[in-house]
Amino acid sequence: MRLLALDTATENCSAALLIGAQLLTREAEFARGHAEHILPMIDALLAESGMTLGQIEAIAFGRGPGSFTGVRLAAGIVQGLAFGAGLPVVPVSDLEALALRGFDLDPAVERILVCNDARMREVYWGCFAQERGLPVALGPEQVGPPESVRLPGGGPAAGIGRGFSAYPQLAALEGVAVRPPWERLLPRAAEIARLAVREVSAGRLADPEAALPVYLRDNVARPSSS
Image (cartoon, rainbow, N blue to C red; front, side):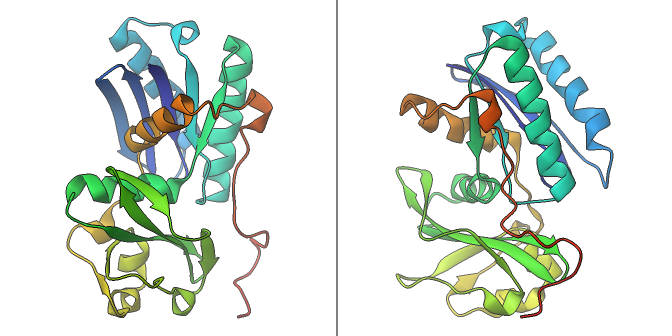
């Protein structure tokens, strides 16, 4: 399988190229300006692999939740690349990608609570169980103040994501254990590419126009009143 993946939903700007069992990656953190870096990263990966975009089977991307500008950027780039090369797209949750990163770091962990900083005194969050090494959502992804985060029943969970460093009270949730440096980790295109393999294998491919961002919240002008 040959998949290109990219993610600009957080400070971590990243791209990955999966060719069979080989995974090539580029990533760097930027406070802003992801648009200036993501296409050169993609070009570098294709050059390193000796492949052209037309030889790729599908393009995966982090569809959010995350920075509004970042998820729009990723969706727009993927639409342009996919239309131009006649390729299908695979939207992948950034929360799910971060959960996979945690399961890779500690395969003994059975459940992971992902909390990413959503700014405006809120977090994007979701809980995932491990099934054959891959994350499975235990409920809908949500956004809200740290006080709204609830661990689903079924046992303890490891915490991962910068929501825990932005809002230390999250680490006090009953049943949640956060170990350094998990509270500093961000989603990456590497995990997005691997999750896309599951989608492609199941035939869950979409047309380029379906490369749409997922925001979870509509109001970006002011924090929630809850």
